[in-house]
Image (cartoon, rainbow, N blue to C red; front, side, top):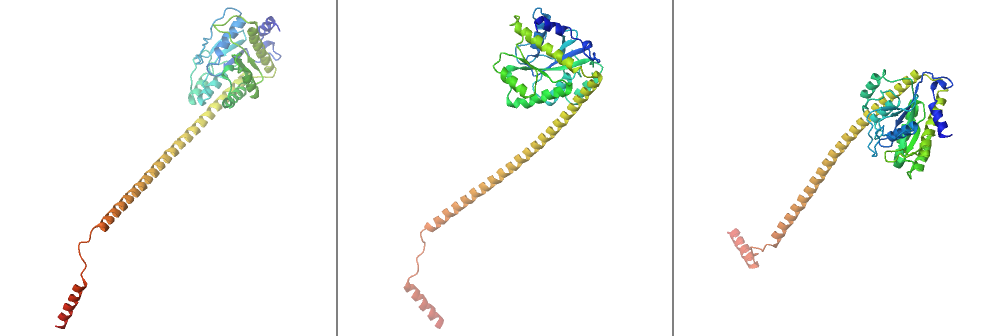
Length: 346
């Protein structure tokens, strides 16, 4: 398709034109999620730049560093029925962060509001309070944004698989992966890794930026093709009977179960850690007692050796002393015997 045909397909999309009609859906939410600093905000700027076909603007406050600066879940309307959502990125798959991620992804928290990081009851309470603020008429498409230059090491694969599968189970839609930094030498490797994880739709592209926003036909086509694939997937999904309110209820139950499971997991890990600490403490005490006992034995042996050495020295001194008397002679002995006999006869 030409750029004009792609733009026409995207602009004309409406739920009412789908085979079964809207079924209660009115808007497509492209829920962007992923790790900090992987280019979500830059991707939004790029999509807006391509679609509006006007001057480039850093509307999503993208940054060149890897820190991540999104503090508010901001919506960026693209067409009357397609809206981009810049969800706050996360550092790691920690227990409370993942709960917050999936609460955002499931559209269970208000849009265009600051993002809080809560765990357990705090997050569950926010979800309940937000019931009247979220729209059940939003159709969710999860878009996982990942920087190709980061690569994927073996230790990351299980974490990424859990993230993608949970996002699919939560939304009912398999996440589309958008790889930023397409020119990276690691791009082909990352694409193969995501395919190994079961991801079917992967789009690699280069974002426009403040430093380089010269219009490129290939970059424009990549973004427009991505949006067209999203539209096709939405049309396929709503070709089946759907109930937005029921799906919202299921997503809420899913996330609350997830939070509860993570709390139990955290408590178990905490208990296990405490048990290991106690065990370590006990082992340290036993080790200290053994060391003291060994020191006592060594000290006793040292004292024993010292006593033996001193006794040997004293014995040697006694043995080496000169005799202070002379033994009696035979003559003296005979005189004594004679004297004794005479005395006896008297």
